[in-house]
Length: 115
Image 1 (cartoon, rainbow, N blue to C red):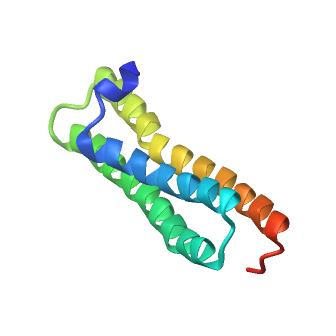
Image 2: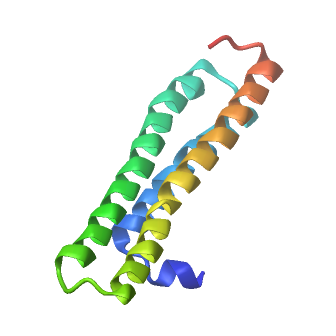
């Protein structure tokens, strides 16, 4: 939780958007209907684009450090930490999407639903 204290509002939002498809997948496993499956597709795209957007905005902030001052060894260290933190939304988003679509497969198997 210490890591989230330093995160921006946008970073927290992109992380939350990454969890939305996972929640919808749990709903689909519990109640596998065509309507829930149809909602899963656009929510997955939202999670995907949210993760990518969070990563890109993180890298923009990393580059802002580079062009805003004198480049020193400390600057490179800050940029490396920032670049690593920029990958978190993509990791969370893709991880949630992986688990979500595995849950969708379980739900489809339970109900005999076709994609």
